View 1: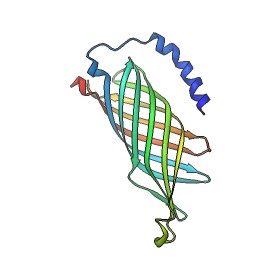
View 2 (view 1 turned 60 degrees about the horizontal axis):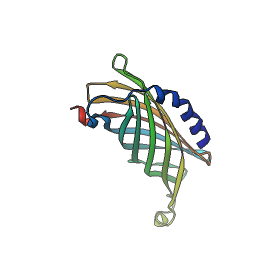
View 3 (view 1 turned 90 degrees about the horizontal axis):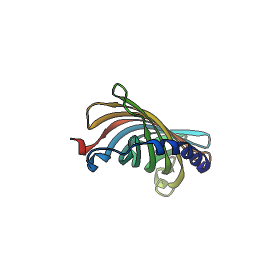
View 4 (view 1 turned 135 degrees about the vertical axis):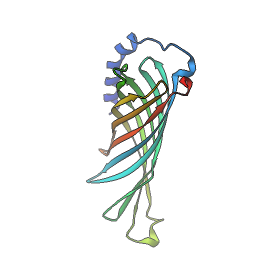
Length: 186
């Protein structure tokens, strides 16, 4: 999976070479975002759903090219056949490639690395719930696409889909909606 990410990043080199540096104040390079999402986690032959809350901090390196870190956690869990699954933490490091706005809309691609903690526990024996909890850590690549609507100079609405692919054939599909803001443009 890391080989796939390396090949994709190589295709981005021409974009980096032709990109222009950002104009304006340095504070306009930094942005933050808050998202609510719906995540489907596929483990073995089962699928679990979780509602996620994520926060992102990023910096524009060049016009339309940003580096961002994201953290999140589920605020709901799901139970299938007596197995309860929860996502207590998720972290991503992404390269964001965003097109210039056309009629207030932009499209973007995210490429990055992710680490997801999954807490699974059997709910069949209430007295043994604490002892039957297993925490797994999955690492892999993150590929995302999305659209943004520029509301004003400092605020955009963001909707996207991400696929998180892990080495053990587990995968996560994440649909999310949120707001991104640039405090330096207020």
